[in-house]
Every structure is written in C-alpha cells, then in structure tokens.
Image (cartoon, rainbow over the protein chains, first blue to last red):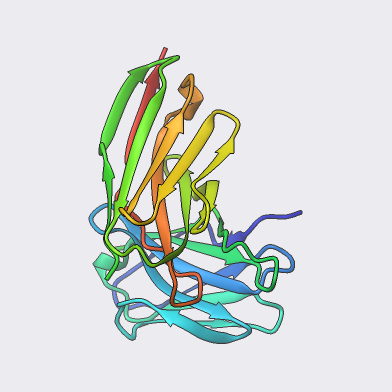
Length: 115
Length: 113
C-alpha cells in the first residue's frame, strides 16, 4: 500500500510569487492535514480537509489556502510568498469511520525555499 | 490552547542504554496521543498511538505510557541502537474533532557506538 505522496519534494521561489503543493493520501484515507515546520516555530498546524470541506484551520494568514478534491487528493497554495514562508510543508492523511483510531500518516514533505 | 513540552530537548547516550523521553501537555481533554520520530530533512514516522482510554502501548523496543489526568506521556526505548538516533515528537489530539495535532518541540536523540 503506497504511503502519503507529496510533490514537489523541493522547490525554490522568489518573494512575491505563489506556490502550489500537492498531497496524495493513502488509498482509502479521507482526511488530509497540512503542517508547516520551521526551525524557529517547530511544527504548526495549517488546516485539515475531510470530504472536500475544511474541517479545522490553524492560525495562518489568508495567503495560505488549501482544497481537497473528490478523490481525497489535496493541494495547498501560498500566495505572495515571504522569506518567512521558507519551511518544510508536511501533509498527513488519516482514515475516517468506525475503525478510525485517529492515527496520522505523514508524507516526506515539500521543502520550500523563498529567496 | 494546548501547549506541549518535551524534556529533555537533547540527549546523547551510548549504545545499549534504556531511555525515557518525557512529554507533558496542558489540556487533558485529548482524544489520543501519538509519538513520532523524524530523521533530518524527512517526514514524520508514526511510532505509537495511545488512545485516551489506554494507559500504555508497546511496539518492539518501544513502550509509551499515558497519564491523561496529569497531562503526561513517556516514551521508553529499550536497549538503544545508533539507528534510533532521530528527533522524537509527541502530539496529543484534542477532543474537538478532526485531526489537529499540537506538537512539542521534540527530543533530539543521539545514540553513539
């Protein structure tokens, strides 16, 4: 069974640009969450999607947005990039339903560098 | 707001030692708590998941305990090996629904030969 797949793995952007990151969850998983990891702030929750609806949202500005498609794949977008957006962006998926233990499975992340 | 503290922040031990990593959290109304390891530049690997109704969970050389009322969890690593070198993170999940994890800052472990 394939794990959580994130693309691209590495990317470099300049200030003011926008970026879109993609996440394919484990087959059958319907919940997808996004996290930002930086040396200064650690791991911070961005948002979670379930059945194409945003279910939870962290404390990030509106420049950070996301969506989920009917096949549970998710994308997140960051507009008007700032230097401080340089980070490892991690996606996690989780099954839902009666057998859900709440366990999250993470991808390898997308490393964004903003110059 | 949930706050998570992990002690120690860093730990260096010789191979073969038994270790205890500590995690404390401020809001005891949790759904479960998950322990992860992270290798440099990599994603997170799930180690153990403890439901709020459980006291402990074991997987191989790893044992995690949970005392929800006191807001504490410990990860015990038996007979440590160099391959255990990584950052260990704990993350409780709140009861409000959804899969929002609050992470601690982690314990950076180095196991030396």
